[in-house]
Length: 185
Image 1: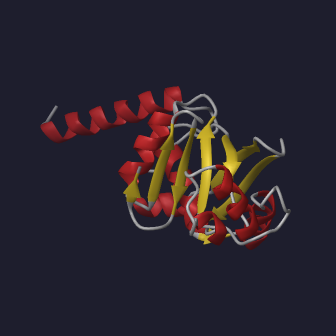
Image 2: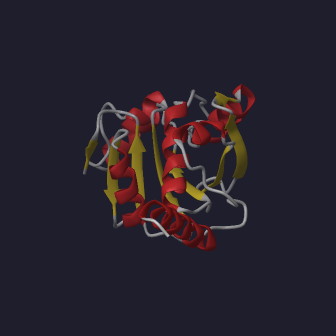
């Protein structure tokens, strides 16, 4: 066996180990970036405040499903005011990529999606951890955790993507992810 064959065998073994830990729904892991863009992108959500669930395929073959995005916009509405705002699809792509990197397809537990300016102002009065110009108000941020995964692991994975902002709130047990400039806190 030559070196190239040996390395290829090792890579296949590593993928096999990852698949053994993943749920059966992830029967294969794409081996290239073009294969990733062809894959059907699905996410599962559970909203911790409304107790609503959503399992949805939001993209396939590199194209976003506009009906699915509209459902996600409604699902991630400001649950305090019921205002709906467009969610940046790049936020969804970050969530999907995190799951791919972590070899998991567990449910995202949503703490906060879109926040209206009114809600954001009310939250700022209660906590100094709420940004005045929060990207939640633009549909560019989400606060989540993944069922069965450590929030530290989710944070580390999100930071490694260098796709936007990542905030870690250990006491409240969630990770903030946004599509703003790359930064972490």
